[in-house]
Every structure is written in C-alpha cells, then in structure tokens.
Image (cartoon, rainbow, N blue to C red):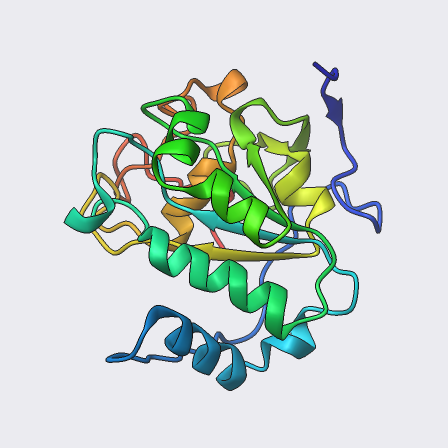
Length: 217
C-alpha cells in the first residue's frame, strides 16, 4: 500500500478541488439499444473533442451493493456500462480506460466479477480499479460548509483526464441518487469506512447535508 500524500491532486499541481463554472448541457435519448443511445449522446455532446488523444478516461458505475440488482433499478445497468466503455474505446482516441468503483456495502471486486466488469475490461482493453484501496491525497475544500478537508483517490482526481459517470436515478438518503451521489464511490473506503459514513451525505440541513466535494457555492 502506498502511503497517502497531501496536496497535489492534478498534473497542473492544484492543491484544491476545482470549482465548476458554467452551464451543463443535457441530452436525452430513448428507445434504442444502449450502444446506439450512448453513441448519439456522445455525438450530441461532442465527446470526441472532450476526450483528447491519449487521455485517461475513468468510467464510474454505481455498483454500491452486491445484494441489490441492476435490473431492479438499484445499480448501473451492466449493458449501459459496457456500451459506454465500448463507445469510449471505439469512438474516441482515449488512451487508458479505467472502470472504477469503491463499493459501499460489499467488496468491489465481487461486484466486478458478478456484473461482468472483469470480462468487459478484457474485451475493451480497460482496467478495473477498486477505488476503496486506491492511493489517496488529502485536499482542501474551497469555501467549505462542513468538511474543510477530504481524502481523494489518485485515480479519480489525478490520473483521470476525463471522468464519465454512469449512475442510476433512485431515491436515497440525499433525496435522489444521481452523479453527485455516485461520486461517493470515489471516496477511499480505507479512510471513510466502506459505507462512506465518514462523509455525511444526507439531505440539506440534516447533519449530513454535504455530498462528496460539495461546498456552499
């Protein structure tokens, strides 16, 4: 195990979690195969310009609990995950593709084997990573609301040039589970516990009202 470091979290030497500025684009597709829908979304969002030649791409599914089932809507559909990985490999000039997750209620590698991630990674020359045990850094949260510092994983916050979240829409402690909640899986479980109880992520104004990486702005 590599000893955790503090401070630098990116190639540019940033020591803080960067703030997001600007507007997000939303693209909705339905009624086709997972791969066709993902490809249409990639085209609409001009993803091949976002992912530059040789970029490392982290694809982040939600496989938090092994006892929950993808076809029940609790976890990311393996079909959509594979479609996303395939599209990154075949439609962009990405270098390394990483399928990363830090399971909350089970061992991540059990989920990887159960839901076909290992075979998927071999098929598309990708690398599965258990983010719970990834190398980590302690960083400062800009304009903090509750937590002033966070442990962040090397893969998600320094190695990856692009992160693609493949979440699910469901009710949860924060009200609804989407990409922001999905990023809880990038928090290293060896520091926060494997249920990520060390990072409050409930509803606003509850004791756990701050999601991973969120601040007042």
